[in-house]
Amino acid sequence: MHRFANPARFMRIAERLLPWVSGATGLTLIAGLYFGLFASPADYQQGETVRIMYVHVPAAWMALFIYTTMAVASVSYIVWKHPLADVAAQAAAPIGAGFTAMALITGSLWGQPMWGTWWVWDARLTSVLILFFLYLGYMALVNAFDDPERGSRAGAILALVGFINVPIIKFSVDWWNTLHQPASVVKMDGPAIDNSMLIPLLLMALGFKLYFLVVLVIRMRGELTARRVRALRLVEADV
Amino acid sequence: MSAFWALVGRDLRLALRQGADAVMVLMFFVIVVTLFPLGVGPEPGVLERISSGIVWVAALLAAMLSLDRLFQADYDDGSLDLIVMTPAPLELVVLAKCLAHWLTTGLPILIVSPLLGVLMNMRPDAFWVLLAGMALGTPVLSLVGAVGAALVLGSRRAGVLVALLVLPLTIPILIFGVGAVEAAVGGYGARPHLLLLGAVLLFALPLCPWATAAALRQSTT
Image 1: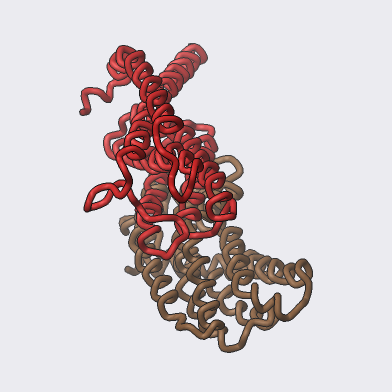
Image 2: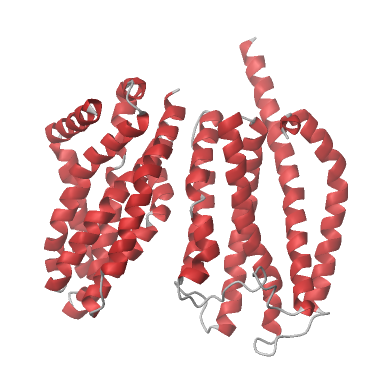
């Protein structure tokens, strides 16, 4: 694992994989959207609005997944001081915030016809909103220092402190009596939804995950280049 | 342990000699609560309905305002470097700082809150629940606030940033603190809410000093 922490080696491998992953992202998203919008039945209760779920649920999964990724990256940054882990965490934050906003907005659009309200203050919605604030707080903190190194270290600790929210979001529908429905895909006794709806859902989830990888690598490449420019400028200023 | 009490004593002495700081936070708390009857109108029914929420939100904001006292002054004059270098475990040092901070902000807020409850038409039988909730909740504000205060040391616009980081993390305190009072007013038991507040406190007591110590180490090296 540590072998790949070398930024130059990481970038070489990432460059080689990027076109393939990008292609796979496009194909999965197109297939997922086709199955989700055309080849799957409307729900007997929700009608056509059920199709919002194919964006909403994967986006919410990504919101949690990306925060977990950031927390793991932050641990390895604090413990092993891998600069790449810090670059990854910082590059992931805006993507995670984007997915969180997407989950909140699509959920709101679904809630208006289904629950009759754009927003309710139940445990799931509130905890996801807090997650959104945590993403924003992380980005604000990382950029608040004149010394980027200080921002990275403070951000890593904040990402770990905020991780407490992730299990709360996951189990909020079980712990509290909420309007939001409990989990129906990842369950002990198998998913509680029909295959015709499960397939587009999983395709979209895979597509979102691949999209995250592609954007993450692009953002990391940008950040690594920016750091190199900064280092070169510092050397130039010294001479 | 002697280092622990020495640090608590030092911070208390500092706070007493610059008494204006602690009083200002308390004044802020009182003024924020006073704004609401003027803003939403002085109808007793409405005020009674929102009283617990207002008092708790104002306490949260006042606690945010006081967080810069926790480490910022010591950071500016360099004494924080010396405090970090003491042989005592840094987590214990942080705990001492939090205790002193709670004694100078959380405790005064707690003592004044029933008085504000009277101003806000709160039902008298809810006072004890409000006090119990505050007694369990305000230490958590100091503990969680310490993490934020340590993280923003040396950053630009630290005062706004710390509120941005800490306020989302204090939402559980607000929910359970207000929930306890509402339950007492509504005739249900406030016990579950108070137990949850106690659980949050027991959770924060070991974990927050640990995170704060990590943040202090990275900010002073």
